[in-house]
Image (cartoon, rainbow, N blue to C red; front, side, top):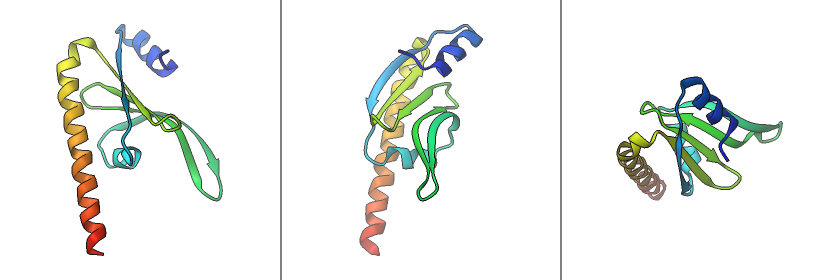
Length: 113
């Protein structure tokens, strides 16, 4: 079932999104904070002792993809137009390569400290 935000976007622009589900690697949410994606929607709660606790986030990329991060289920669903499938494949590979490099660099920094 699609998110209401995605359904509204489809209706507004007269398009239909396909979806792709990917298990989120460890640390992916932190990695996403440093990316140049626009956070369009979120569901969260607030705890004065721990600050904001996100449950879900929807990011919009420059390529037109919507990345839905379910932080409670540890899964990412990417919404895209079917004609973008090849571009999406390249995007995902590049994104996970950047994540791997960031994780490797963090481990190197931890060892030096």
